[in-house]
Image (cartoon, rainbow, N blue to C red):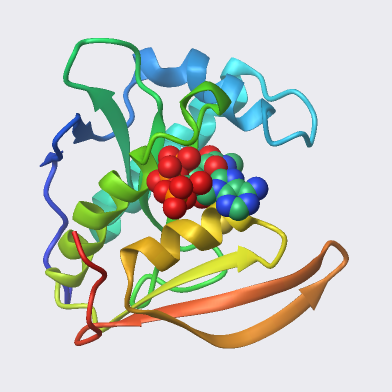
Length: 173
Ligand SMILES: CC(C)(COP(=O)(O)OP(=O)(O)OC[C@H]1O[C@@H](n2cnc3c(N)ncnc32)[C@H](O)[C@@H]1OP(=O)(O)O)[C@@H](O)C(=O)NCCC(=O)NCCS
């Protein structure tokens, strides 16, 4: 593998970040269902978790669950996926349960995840965000260092392809 693997655990002020595990399946199914594209069963959520573990095993990237330090239930995930991109230049992804939105959680976790993936030796990380997704665009703005490199359009509208280069200047912490 040309890149070093991301760490198994990352820490932020409010969260311990670790990989998905079987006990996460029920709320992951709830999270995927909240996307609004139809109900996602526990079995389907389990399959997605298994695929994520395989990505991590083979390529050293993947998503981290945000586990609150106060012992309350997980609130979502932040991590690196292939998505519309590649293993060499992966995509930052974040998704929180609706009740956890608006408290700075995604930005807090994405900062350490972004630092960690850039420390694997990768030069470039992407974030593809729909033009209509104001919250996600705001997270990228707060992280800093992302710029729009491409714009594509699909049946749901415009997708802004943001890139963060290794030497870009990050936002204020
Ligand atoms: C995107 C998402 C992860 C953000 O999580 P979060 O923890 O709420 O994000 P943060 O609190 O760190 O930051 C969100 C920012 O967006 C702002 N925001 C939220 N909704 C907004 C809206 N409709 N218009 C403008 N700004 C908005 C918030 O005010 C906040 O900015 P601020 O800190 O300057 O006030 C969350 O909304 C989510 O899970 N959405 C559904 C999944 C998704 O869209 N994932 C991204 C796919 S590209």
